[in-house]
Length: 143
Image 1 (cartoon, one colour):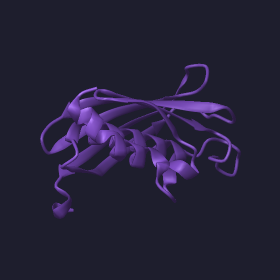
Image 2: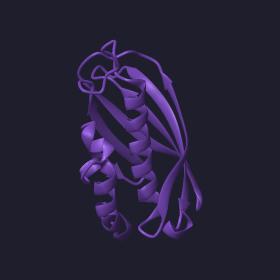
Image 3: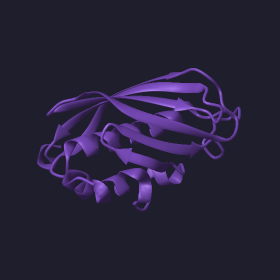
């Protein structure tokens, strides 16, 4: 494990939802992999549905932004704060049960801006949602 990656573990844990009251924790998002260039997490459909019993589009957006933010934090390092500024989600397929898996990969990782592609799939590997998150990387005093 590199020094940068080792320094990120507390931040990753916080972003992954281990902090009290965190939205990702309430939605039962579980990070299964968090390395520079790839962040993977799962989320149950149950408890994250809209009135028709389908996975809520907002739940997919929360999963996508959580993954992109973790990826941004890994890239930014411990001295910078990651702030999402643009999230775009396209919903491709309805899901009524089971678990969805999200994977975030970088499209661009610069010194001040980072953009991530996030795919969310069902248990059969079918694409449920694609998203793109753009983050600003700032010192915490600038936010």
